[in-house]
Image (cartoon, rainbow, N blue to C red; front, side, top):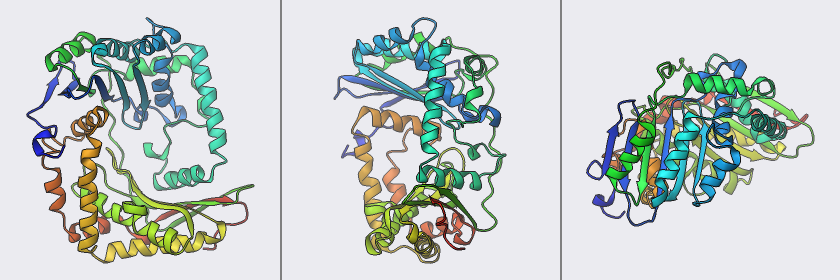
Length: 430
């Protein structure tokens, strides 16, 4: 991928919209013998109520538990017999899926995808097993400081009226009430072709691949498929909030702190991602890791993260520390945020991170799976088929002032949500 013409672009990506609304992207890669599919459809947790939290995720997980054509054993034997795999999972907005097979077995892979998307059986026994498995996982997670700090942070950052307030996985209160009939009804109502994206990458002939997609998916309709719900407004905290969760028997505390960041559609998203890289991602986790972990030895891990996505994701800092280091870790992290919003980053810091961002792009595109996921993301966020051709140019056009303005736009350390989970009786003093 060293030359521009090797990158996927409008001259070598074929984009077709089927009459039922499915967007298909095909990229031929004959350096491999396999084919990868990656895609999404609009059936995430935005379509569920708080009382049925986890319904979308459980539905997506149950798709591979059997269909009306193939029971569980037959479904997985079909894939295993050709060395293929297929997986699905739900987020807030979409159900994502991905699969891989030898190029000659693309017809089988698409047939199975069609089967699980359109004709799942939701057998009660396997659905109950999935539900019990999740309840067990939640029980263990409830005793994990990192999970509890992250949950408290999310619930405080997004109010109960916002879908992001809730985890997609479900809770100990909602999961026991979700039945196979609920999954069937959710699938019947929500699943459909409109808004679906499917990318096909590998040793395929474009025309043949499109013909196979049409054969398996072009006749899919759901006249009752609802439109993707609009997100309600998400408002940054008006003042600082500090939350502490005590857990018996723990020796380490976890910190998650931050505020609302940009969506992937925001014009300053790229500047914010570079600013975040400098703050807590680049190298050994940026300035946060350098100061908190390397210089002061306060944390076992320390980094920052910017979620992005269709809606305003969190811009957060996370650290794992000894309980006696919680207060100092929080203050030093806030110091680095204050520095980021008051001082332009140095030319050297910007240059290093630009090299990091542009250098990792070819690595992401080394595999068919990386290309397929990138094509799907380009379509989902309306980036255009030539997005990769101009990626480096757009990055290098960013200045220290652009990063400063993006940081100032989103980060106000005086209005951070700070969530800590750790041993009982060790809450930091306000």
